[in-house]
Length: 254
Image (tube, rainbow, N blue to C red; front, side, top):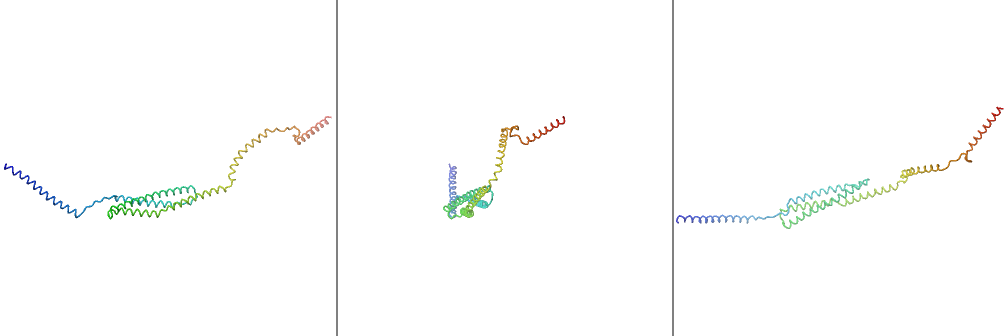
């Protein structure tokens, strides 16, 4: 019994010492954490739009503005001064196609500026004065400036005026063609037609003449009134010569 008593006392003593040492360590750590929290407060903020999204919208706006400048230049270079009506029709179609494309690009540029404006207003309302969201305001200002420049450069009224000039030129060409056809003499178209009619009618007339000649009876040479006087005189002369020859032969025979 005396030997087992020290072992029972040692174990509780060790537990008490361990608890006491743990209490000392935890107290120092807690004091250290509390002092850091008071000196440097930690604030966590979440970005509702990433900088890459704003940059992509800026790049899209820049590309659209450049493409619109090129398309408008092509539209203004289309001329109405030509004598070919077919060429004028092609130019009018090309001009209408460019106008539709420019309007679609303008609508897309406006939508990008509106989207950036919504982000900019949201950043102002939620994170007022936070410099970490300055990229949103910069993106909106850039897109808005591009939109203002494009609206000042692209004049859709000039495209409409060019279309009207092309239509007017086409109308003038139509009037010139009608006037040329009206001034053209009618006889120029007759030879081919009249020649065809004559070539068609001539054989019929010839056949009619042949039928008339075949139907008419031939004149009788021995009928009275049909014998030629020159032939009768020649016959009388021949008869007189024969009579004189016979008389001569009779006289010689005597």
